[in-house]
Each structure stands twice: as C-alpha cells, then as structure tokens.
Image (cartoon, rainbow, N blue to C red; front, side, top):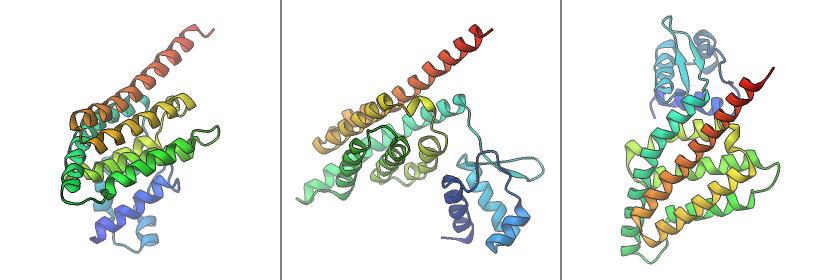
Length: 228
C-alpha cells in the first residue's frame, strides 16, 4: 500500500475500535507528529476516509469523525441494498464456477457458512455487540466473495452501519434472529447456485433492517408528540 493508504487504514481502524469517537476532532498537526507522516499524505488519507463516509472536513481543512443520524443510516442501507444484491449475484456465479472445476468447497462459501453458524451461537442476551461484529463480517465477506474490486471497496460503509452507527432497532434479540435467519438462507442460495434467490435475500435483509429503523423513528416521533 502507499503511504496514503497505510495512513488511511490506520485511522480507519482507530475509528472502528473507538479510539476516535463520532464527532471528535482530528487535529492534523497532532496526527502528523503522532503518525510520523507529513501533512500532505495525511490530508490525502483524510480525504480518502471522507469519501468512505468516516470523516467530514470543513472549508478550513479541519476534520472530524463522522456522525450519522437515522436518516443517514437509512440512505446508507438503501445504497447497501443495491451493492450487496449485486455482490450476492456475483458471488453465486463465482462459487458455482469454482465448484464446476473442483470438488473442494469454495473458501468463500465455507467462510460465509461458518459466520452464519457463529451468529446463531451469539443469539443470547448480552451478546449483541459480538453479534453485530459477526454480522458485519458476514456482509464484508459477501462483498469480497463477489470478486469485483469496485464492490469490495464498499466494505467501509458496511462497517459504518453494522458496527459504528448500528441503530438500536437492529440490536434487539428479534432483529438479530431475523438477520441470522436471512444470512443462513443466503448461504443456502449460494450453495445451490440460485443467483436470483441470493440477490433477493441479500436485498430483503437490508430492506427489513431499514423498515425496523423507520418503525422506531415513527414510534419515537409519536412519543415526543404525546409527551406533556
């Protein structure tokens, strides 16, 4: 990787690990000294993170970790529905092609099945954070399984909405169980080579997540209107 990409990758992981919290300033002078990089590659790294939705810059060149409200999360899920639907179709075709030339199970399929199984074991009270991490990995692995570089580069928005700004509506036991069932069904579609089902299931899972968020937004708005 180039210095810019290395710097962006380091900052990205610090954001996802919670070292830099949403809304926190990212002072370039301090970061430049801490990371031992000059201001130019640092600015380019911040621009790269801005393109991925992780950082926001102002007119004066200042940078902050992004924040996301429900409406922005919904927009991200709408984008993900299109991208992951395509990813599921492409992954299905690639898995089918791999099985046509070898009796060994394609690694991508094996990993997705393993992740779906691991999710099922985390459907317990108090395990919501662990489930969210596994769910994010499942979606990221699906993007990688597509074999398409443009699709794969959207993994940041997956981690953004699955890990960093995961709405409360998606953290309930019921939502987690529905997500795991959707992932398990998607694995079956990939295994049987049904690209239409794979795309439909990938899209449906994200559409259902968006519906839960909208329902929570409506409930919150009703509660506020009824408050004295």
